[in-house]
Length: 329
Image (cartoon, rainbow, N blue to C red; front, side, top):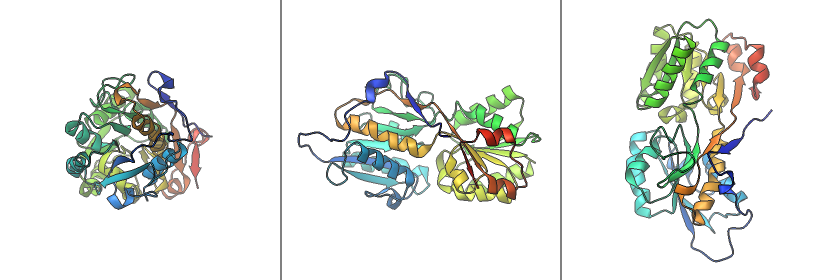
């Protein structure tokens, strides 16, 4: 059962456009800047190793673009170090790229550095609340793209975790220290659901193991892991630490479950990157980011790893298993 779908904030027809042809008149080759947390090598070229960035190029191919003929990419990777983004952004600005596709912490570095180069978000946790755009329907400025809406779905993830581990007296929430919105959303949802949570904030990859030790020392019965920032490039390590500490963990993105994590609930990030191609296409053909409504995921996928559940000695409730979009054996 596939429940992935997207809706536009306003004016659904805005992104509709002809497929299959880049356009008849000759034009200069476009340069598309790409910013990510992976290594530059994983993001570069016509067949990048990163699945998300490969999805973006797949989306461009479906719109009629040929790499090396109609466009090339200028990829810059932060090597899981968000503090590198300001320098990487400055590099892309010097190159005068036509558009930049980025996500997560790179967006804030871009917001501070440029108000002229078009930026396609793939995706933002909540672009309005983060101050990246004025509204979903009329973004204003030079930012447009897709929203992950991770803040709005925090309560649902907490509900699922309670259903999965009903006996958990305390739930640890692991997130990036600068992610104020996610922390506030988790604490508000916990208060509404009468759940006790412990927010464990980290700043870099070196603190990930310590976060799980803190959760274990506090006798947390389960863990809610936000995907943003330095955590995502270390999905496998995060999943391994959760298993080592015998902590049932629910994640925002399916990539954690594919890496050995227990369960995830959220939008499919590779689909979002592929959908970003439509925004790039419109901008390269002259559209202003300010006029392109932000697209939101309207449906989310629930993915469960049964092998991990068995290793934890955890029985997945039938109600969860029946609602799952995918169960990994």
